Image 1 (cartoon, rainbow, N blue to C red):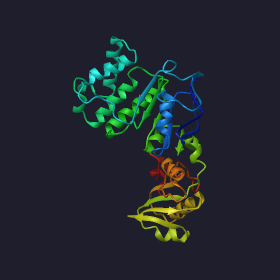
Image 2: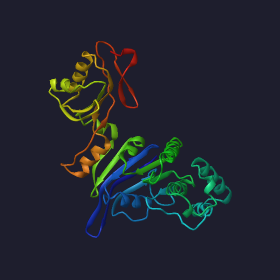
Image 3: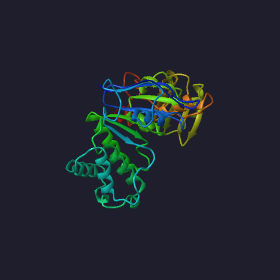
Image 4: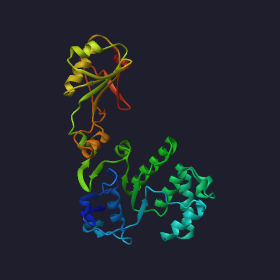
Length: 333
């Protein structure tokens, strides 16, 4: 069971916009479809939804060729699709009717989703009276109101404030728990990292990277550490023949060639009985990897943390809170 896109290609005239890509979802999950503007993401989505025809390859759902009859789709496009002058309730009823829903189940579904997304008070208002974020939530409702099996979300968090972003995140997590297959496209890589196990990155229609995010990240070595201390440790860093890349208020980003150099530095700081508030070993984030793959060899990037563990003098002196390494109070030196 699941979705298979195999060796799919598409040309517009002589321009190859999608070149032999393959995607597989064999269990309920959120799959990340990534790429720069013009990389071929939208064309891929439109071929999947049957809006445009592919030139070659196959797209199947549960081993049957995908069409509007074989799979119940839900689609949230990046562009706004609500009618500004029409009441929200009327729009939702209309979209539900297009999906073949009966009146009774339509009202029940609208009320259920309005409650989940906290938009009940807006149902009798025209869309133009709603904020950008609330319009986005209404548009999300049109994508899921008919209980689809396969959902495509293009920039689902666009226009949402932190509170509404959290609401929608919980809804998406719940959809996966209920057995839904989701393809998500987003420009914010931290969003993709939060939801997706597997990704595909497109550049100029070609697959430049595909696979499990953690396995991909594990192929990159750490080359930065971040340290926050209560005292100046500049001289200790220099003694270890390491380069300080950035520093302020006893917070340091230090370049390393391997993780051992980072651990050795931490050990020296601990020996001098200097209190450390944070210690992070840094590897490239998905955002960094994305820029490297689609931005060329000269692309520069920052780094984010990976989880590690360190023991010194037979004591575990650091532990993880919110992905940050902090000296354990019980073992403070």
